[in-house]
Amino acid sequence: MKKYLLICSLLLVSLAFISARGADRNSAELSAEIETFFASFLSNRAQCYNFSENYLTPFDGRSPELRIDDIAGKQAMVWEAWRRANQNFEEEGLIPTASITEANVGHWLLPENLEPDATMNFFWGSKGEKPENGFSLFLYLHGSGPRDREWENGLRFAQAFQDAPSIYFVPQIPNIGQWYRWYQQSKQFAWERLLRLAMLGGEIDPNRIYFFGISEGGYGSQRLASFYADYLAGAGPMAAGEPMRNAPPENVRNIAFSLLTGENDRGFGRNILTQYARDVFGRLAEQYPGDFVHRIELIPERGHHIDVRVMTPWLKQHVRNPHPKRVSWENFPMHGRYRKGFHNLVVNERSNPDESSRTFYNMIIDGNTISLTVDLVTYETTEVHASGVEMKFARTFIPATEGRVTIYLCSNLVDLSRPVTLTVNGQPAFNGQVTPELRHIVNSTAIFFDPERLFPAAIEVDLKNLSR
Image (cartoon, rainbow, N blue to C red):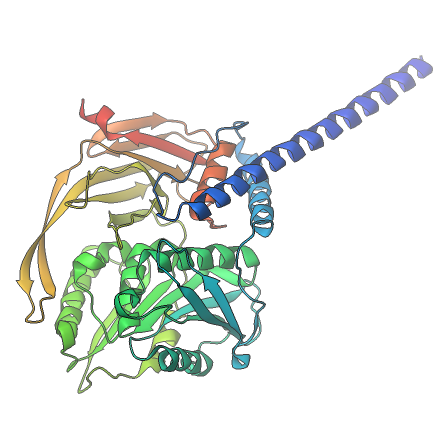
């Protein structure tokens, strides 16, 4: 009998060992499959220089359902596969980090058909000791004077500003004339590379990223703030002032936003536009308490030159919330290009057929109840400055009746163990349990390349089905 029990015990141990080896092998195979998917995605996206919205073929491979207690392990596996794919991807990366006082210079060649003969030079350097969660990252955009002088000024600012510990990316505009704009698609290519690589490296705190700039860099950082708000903790344009159509204010609902302009800075109506922004942000902050942290000021007795030293200490007080439960997003085309996703929303098919209108999403999560409105918004110009700049607009909203959007979810947004209720434009769209799946983690990683947004669950909405 003892001999029989011994044989059974040895057999069970052997089976357990074989099973574990099989599980390890299957896990390794799955990880390799995901890495291959990411490698293909990176290659396709790099070659898609017109930034088509359809650059992502979703991962639908072996995508098992997940138990809630399996999610964290699968997120770690997917992020590691993403890290390896990026590590093996041939591209111009960030240069090794050294002190900003050493003025280390890197160079990125931008895609030829986005901007001809465009090499973006940049300073990259740190100040202070690296915190446990990583450095704060500041992107500084210079003004429109002579390129070399403006770039050198940016380096001096980066060295002098009181915001350590921090890392600075200080780019030089590649070309002048019509290409002297920070929001163009060629520069979007650079910003998204910067964000992707910064998120990967381990040196940057992904919840402490800030964009700011002065004059032309102020215009650029205001547009970029509205376009990339879901990556940012804060943004600080200075000596600028964009018309609201170019930088919809609702998009910066969950970040800290500062706009500082001299009260006598009358060029292109900058002081007037700054006042208009202050009025709009004041109303939004009153309507949505706590959601629109802002500091918008007209600096007394100043023209186009203001004290820029006050910006980064204010910005650095603020930390990103990567999972806000109240999201407003006007998906506007910046230099003809739309974002694929924003916060936890991903567009599978836009509701607006062309640039004559835009799609506006508003999402509110209360417990496990999600309310999403999807509208078409159109603009009518109501005021034009003497310089020809369109200053004020009236917006019209009508409910969208077509378009497809995915709402990604995680345990910071809803309780994944309980049923979720979703209404879209007031109509029931989903009521039940959401199923965590590996494919959602993989696809959200490819779309957002953000370690804080590896979403395990999703609800897909087709507005045509709701309107029937």
